[in-house]
Image 1 (tube, rainbow, N blue to C red):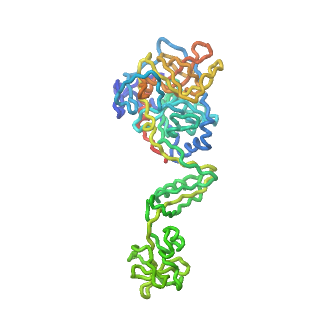
Image 2 (cartoon, rainbow, N blue to C red):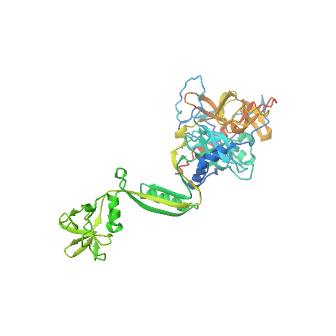
Image 3 (cartoon, rainbow, N blue to C red):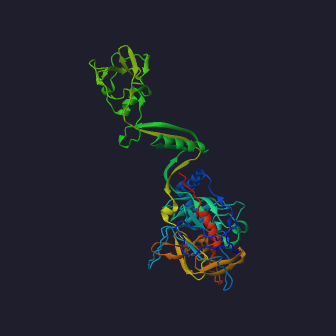
Length: 514
C-alpha cells in the first residue's frame, strides 16, 4: 500500500547522511502511527527485567520461537513490485560514520543481532530475531511489526518486551534491554498492512543482576546516606515491599571509609564505643572506683567542641583520666555518658573518632525472590548499531542474520534457533496478497519461519567491521516451488516512509532504569 509523500515538494537526500542524522523530507507525519509505551516507568522496567532474570533465567530458557504469521504464500513477480518514493538514502552505522572497506573470506557475525523476548497472546514466553540500529541516543532496536504489536488479541503490544543481543541458552553477555517505546507505520497499526510490517523500539540502558535475595527479605548496604534514602524511597513506592527501614552501620574499615561522623557519647554505651574504636579500657577511661552518679546535672558541651583528644590519659588514681591536664573525666555508673568535671561543673564530653559509616536498607517483600540490578550502559555503546538504507533498487545482494528454528513443511528440522545463522542472496520483488503485501521484497533462503521473524537484512555488510545498512526485516517465509521446503524470506521494502518512522524513533531518549 504505497503512498508517495514529500514535504513541500522536497525528497530524501541521497548518499551518506551525517552522524547527526539530518532529516530528509521523505515522510509526512501521518505515515507514523502514534508511538506506544511498553514500559512507562523505571519501576515497571525493573520488574520486567527481573521477570526474565528470575529463577535462573527460567522464562528465557523456556521461551519458544514466535509462531504467528510465519508462513506466507508469496510469488516472485517480474513486473510491478516495490518502487522508491524518493531518492535512495542511507544512515551510517554506529562507528561507521566514516566509511572503510575490507575483505574477508569468512562471514563474521554481527554483535548487534539478538533476540527479543515477550509474552504472547497465549500468555507464554516467546522470541523473535532483532537487531540494534543507529540512533541519536544509541538505544534503538528494529524487528518485525508483529514481534512488537499484538495481532492475535485486542491488546496493543506484546507484554514484558526486552531485547538481548548475543543471547545464548540463558546467557545475556551484554545485558537485558527493556523496551520503552514502540514505533510503526500507520498502515500497519490500523490495517496490519504487510508492506509496513516493521517496528522500531527504543530501549532503556541495559541491566545485569548483581544480587539475589530469597525468602521475602530485602537487605542492601550503601556507602552514603543519599544512596540509602533513594533506595528506601524506591521501595516505599513499590507495593511489593513493606516495613522499609534505614539504619546506620559503623565499622572500623577505615581503608574504605567514605564518611566520618561526630557522635555524642551518650548516643552509645561504653562497650559500643570500645567495639567501634578498638581502644582499650585504659584508653577509654576505665570505670573509676567512685563513678559519677547516673543523674549528674551535666550540660552538653557544644560550643567548646573539645574533640581533639580521643584517648584518655590515665590519672594518678588509676581510674579517672585527665584530658591533657585540663579536665578530669569518667563514665557514669550506667556507662551511658562520659562526663567531664572542672571544679563543680559537670559536662558531657563529645566523642570523635574515624570509622566507616554505612547505611543499611531493609524491607519485607511479598515476593519470594528479589533481584538487584546494575546498569551496563546504552545498547549502541555496548554492541554498536547497524545503519539504515532506504529506497534502494532491487537486485542488490544482502546478508540476512537471524535465529531460524522450527521445521520445513516436510518435517525436516534444519535449524535449532540456538545460534545465529546467516543467509545471502539478491533481493527481488514479491507479492503476498494474504497479508496485504503488494510491494514486498524477497531473497532466496532456506531459513524456516519460526525464530527467523525479525531477522535483519543488511546491505553492503562490512565483514571486518561487522556493520552494514539495515534494508529489511523478515516477516515471513514461503515455499515458492511447492516442494515442502521454505526457499524464500520476505520483507517489507524500506522506502522514505520507513525512514520517516525510523527518524521519529531515532531521536527519542529512553534513559536508565537503575
